[in-house]
Image (tube, rainbow, N blue to C red; front, side, top):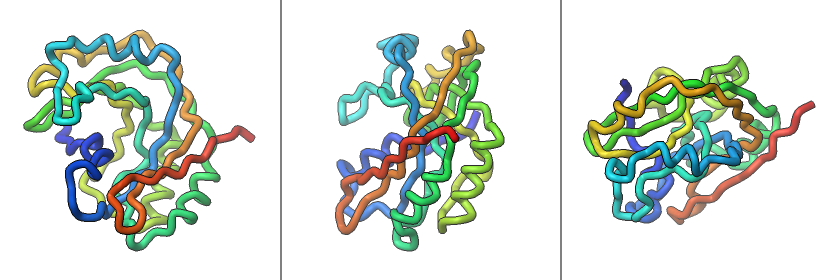
Length: 190
């Protein structure tokens, strides 16, 4: 198990912080037609209920390429150019695991580290100034945030299913605002 600082809290920082966010994040999004069925795996009584009343469920499946891009040293247009070189990535998901911290457990699908994912992660890390708290890359798709200690019962192998990540998104705070700005790039096959 890994310790994890909430990515979801970072996405909603504009609601909780008064100072400007200093980091950006590149994510790969996917569409899973029956994603709501995946969310129903989580027992209602286990769901972490935060102050935003989002019940701890992740409604937009995605995996992170890199979090921690330093905004003061990075031009969003340059990030777009790099994302435009990405191609869709197909993976087979076959396992649910968890991250833990003192406030909640994160129930997630493990995303296999393909050569493309590794390449994109390393490319972004080497191209843009960034701050890293985690030395290893563990791509995943969050399913839900649950109460501490309840996540372990969800860790399991699952019937393998295909996922195609076909959109890259750079999320960051622009100017003096904490509101998130997103640059989206549809990933096209050659």
